[in-house]
Length: 74
Image (cartoon, rainbow, N blue to C red; front, side, top):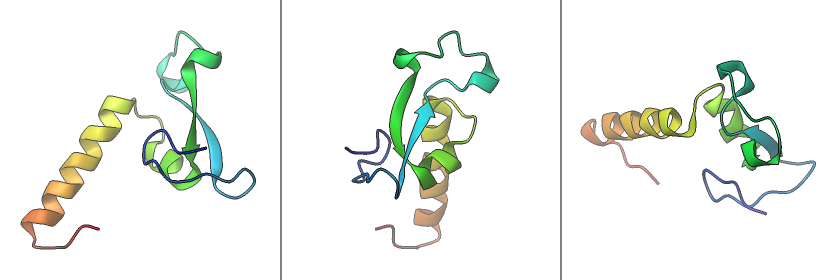
């Protein structure tokens, strides 16, 4: 019971949500079990309608920005 994106422990009714890996709004060919995964609710909200690769790239850009500013990332 871990988030597919962050590895965070999930608790149903607390922070667990189901994510469409390829968003339906982006024309996902599959809407069945092959196109869903468990995700932390806040991570799923951040991912929004991005594909997993787009989401990872967005996070990478943010991390690089903060590291260049000298901010600590925990």
